[in-house]
Image (tube, protein in one colour):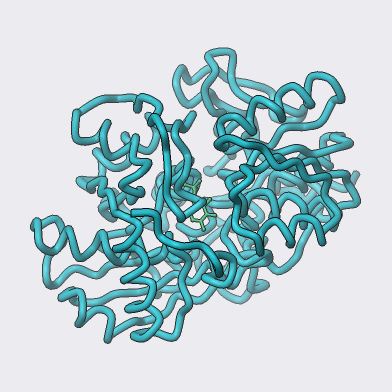
Length: 394
Ligand SMILES: *Cc1c(COP(=O)(O)O)cnc(C)c1O
């Protein structure tokens, strides 16, 4: 194997205890049952890995190779992930009464959602470390992203999704050659089926934050925002939260960027947005809890937000609190209303999750959490095309 001199992590670290783990074997959760973060020798790359050095690199997330875990360039599984447009949205800003609004248009990723970022890294790295089959429980988009990257890598993929997953996503997973199981239950129930298969057949389980590298793919959104805004970060980032990988990943990226000298200690306020029918993080934030209790009877047509319990709950709550942000719940009907407003104002056909973040800004403007002169980035995490035929539940 040829090793790029600057690529790869030095080790992994438990996000709860700080305990160190070996990064060159397949790893999942720490012994404490918490997510592991990849750590890099940032001092060693500081002089070479600069905004100026990165500026003219390829327009995908591999431009940040020095802070990604894949060692061998030949191990990269690429479908064109990352470097999505950051779109100025002045009419939406006027409608929301906010100084400036940008949409980070993640629907343009392979498989039509930002799950591609995480799966590009998780699958590349799993293959590099010797995995022979991938498995994932999914609310939908993680399944199709895993199927796509598994197909590109030549690895078999096993996906377990709830029976009422949007039909376009089910069709996509099948077309990408994955072994698909539809379950009468939620993503947490799908997780149990995947765990059994992993034990019995040796599948490598790439569940959200239960292996260390999906978050590394998602963190690249933080680096991209900095570059695309011309070398700074916005006042507020509004993120639709299921497992929270992107929010946690961007928060990690900001710490790395500070250690690298790209930014100072200031951070955007991180706003976590959930569905009214499934908002464990919002409930925990309002109650001042460090962890979020599982949400009973979760429902929402925004399938990416139908996550009743997140292993990274404490990391999401930490980032929201430390940044002076907020957590906001949005009913499905409001998501749909804002999908239409975003579409008419910007030309982006947003997923319900993208409608949810616009609705959250409306709520926070009224409640004072976002000011008239704030610069706000809204994450549209997927394409509206993947939800055609799905109706709001409340
Ligand atoms: C998975 C998903 C989310 C939630 O992402 P997390 O990083 O798990 O919080 C939001 N929107 C869409 C479209 C998704 O597929």
